[in-house]
Length: 206
Image (cartoon, rainbow, N blue to C red; front, side, top):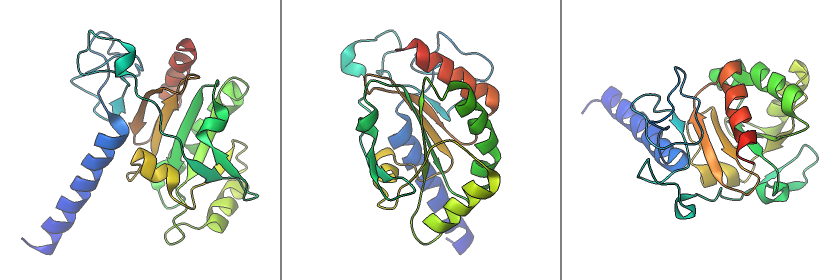
């Protein structure tokens, strides 16, 4: 196998692993709008990048099928530790990003709009994958300041959140209910319409 094929195979393997860990299941067969924005169902034939917390049977909805969102520790700009569990009782939007990720940069203005609209109702955790090599805290902070973003940014310097959610393909976004249940997510950039749709559904799950 030549070097090019090996690289392609490795990238595909990483992506599949990320989907398996971060995704769980596809969207509902009972509600499949054109852009597949449902957070409540199980399997969908299309929109494989979208995920929801359900069991294997799309007709089942027991508490046994609910997936608790893994806790993690990240750090704010001042170096203070912040845990996902600190926001128990509130709906949470988690977004994994990096400055070198073109699609991350592309969707950031849409998340800024969402934060302006829903910031009083929903916790936003914009998590920079700060591995210290391809991304540093200084680079990320400079990027946020230059663009004037006001949403809360956290730095995953220990890669605690990245490993917990298998967020090895960026951007990746997840939604957590006030009771701490992983309510779905997407790997890849999201449009303003899709972000708003996910958040509206998240609020309905309270």
